[in-house]
Length: 128
Image (tube, rainbow, N blue to C red; front, side, top):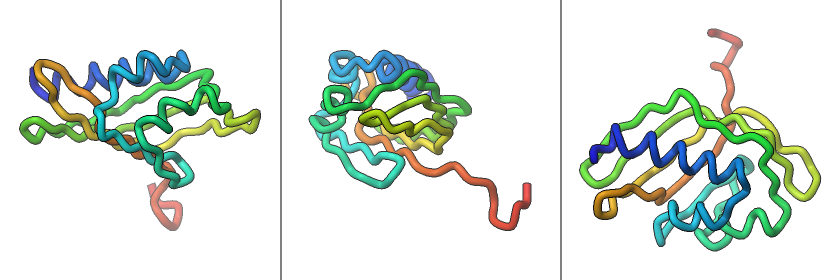
């Protein structure tokens, strides 16, 4: 399976698991050396990422759109827009963010090795 086929499917399964707050499903989607960067710049290990729901993260909606995928052999990079309705320990953290995902091919499937969620802003000076 090519990156152009496998990566979008992986991202859809990841977003669905995030929306369901399903650490068990995420466990099967994340590579062993996974690292995630959240919207405020903090870095989480695989185990910390999986523990977010038990520690107060609640996703009510979580979708990735405008995904662009580039394949690099057994690795792929996807860049898209993440829209989430989310709270952390009762504080709203909803919004639209730029998301970059790195996936690695393992056997016939793909797993996420890295997720980076950051600000989504317009160009400087208000230009379109």
